[in-house]
Length: 219
Length: 219
Image 1 (cartoon, rainbow over the protein chains, first blue to last red):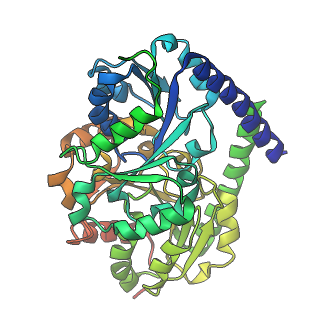
Image 2: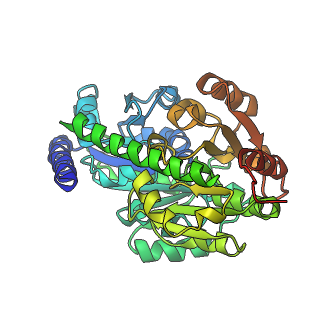
């Protein structure tokens, strides 16, 4: 019985995800699902990257959170269209929630939509939102054992972003050990080392996102 | 329909939690549920605190993880009885899972049982395991906005432990802002600042845990 219900929930989500993806494809919008634990630095990465992305792409953001509109306010301050999706305690975004939010976004005028998922290293990974690419964020302050301990988060990532690398001298994080574990879980994803305080790696992240999107309307 | 299923799941969990609590009470064991996001430093706190606790208490640990036995190995290295509970991708421990694990622990010979939950700031907070006290861990590297963004994690905490305070000079974390948000969500919980590198606050945490437990058999 429990398995049946779970299957229905995931199947319903998969249908909505396919609808979302078709909707993006029709309009030439690339959708990126940004995942990672609480406080890994997803919003800070967006704050650092959006000014560069805006130069060549029409970009908007969906912010997923349990409570508060703090993240959406940070994105809006950059003059980027943003919708805050509140899950009211829910532990992940799903494709139906995203579908509702899409009504508030002018998709015809977009090249790239970034969906920042709820800060949670587990549940969001199970729910396809209709995205084209997954970017998974890991803060070095979380420890180098996380790829082995949370394999489901990393296995479908197209890009893995290590954040807060300026903290490497002060935390126990062996980059090579993390790379080796990541290679076992996901041999395909590129890994970018970043630090928003010195803007390290931000250009590379921006370039990856720009290459992913299809700037049809930009010069 | 979905609400009905969720209610059944939570009700079944509540029954098992009450059974666990009765089982602990009969044997004079105090049970502490240790919660927090991935990489907030729960296992490191235990590693730092257990040597002191062991001096006066008979203590054991249940380690909850999605995958690997790495955390249990770290606890076993301290010569503390430990059972690794693997959720196989599941995002939280529940009282029934704990019930199974209790069969492997000599409860009659214990004063304190610490259950380290799955690293996740959301789902574990909804599941009573039968514990007497909740200790919630927040790493300063996660950012001072987390109490407001994850209120359900903090609202039922008996103790809130700020970890990695040696990183305060390098991260954006205003302790007073976090305290103000915590006071709104949970005015009752004591807050302890810790750092396992210099053992700051570890004595205070050990004293709190010792006071919580009832060392009936110790000298």
